[in-house]
Image (cartoon, rainbow, N blue to C red):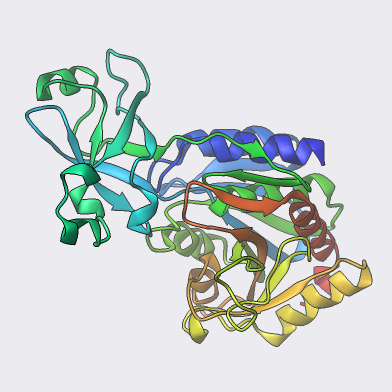
Length: 353
């Protein structure tokens, strides 16, 4: 798993909020080039890697983007106000270190570091300390003394902001970093293409702007119009304080998650034929798997399965703790099994569709 671990680290540390996925896309193109017949980028920015073969055609999609921030106002004293891009829980943002990416690079270099600050508790009234600090009351401090100093660095309204966090191994083959949602899915997609030996047509798609509306999945699925599809994403793992079995039965080290339904059915209700394909493949190769029915959150599969006249679509999830935070955590054992399940499923898709 060393190679898979190194791939995940490289992807997770790459910076790419929604709409600015270029650095991640470059890594994926480099990693997939020798395993596919063609790679291109469409008008919206989706990376589409095609492997020729016979019918049925299969689309596997993993979104490239991560949640982040964007500069929306520069104060005269040089402090930056920001807007959230994607679904943040405000408490996780306070006191984080961030990286700003001027577009284009400013004269101070290609990136600028900063910290997210707010009014210190020592200067808060009692009622203020008892309230959750909202993102709108936070600001970014890059050390600047004026708006002019900020401007010289190339930072403007619209500059992307990313949490600054490094990939870190833990014990028991577990790792933590930002952006495992969904760089883990991207790593699984790449690893599955490395392992697969299939006679069927495969489209591996690194989709853009999933975190802000499943946008890339919608446009790429419309163009490709595959016979069947799999979205690869994270799935919320419990097994820790605060989450009971009734909330989720998904846990680390128990294998890939096959989604039966998400978002209380408003997202996707996986077709029985797709479930039979994925569950049957897992059983054939003794790959442990988990099933998921959830009320909140959805994936690219929601957009894909409603494209054109409908595309049978399933979801393979990587069990992940603390998603949409800077300290997401997963098991490399699960990551490996997810890649194995998808590779084997691609080889047997013709038996089911």
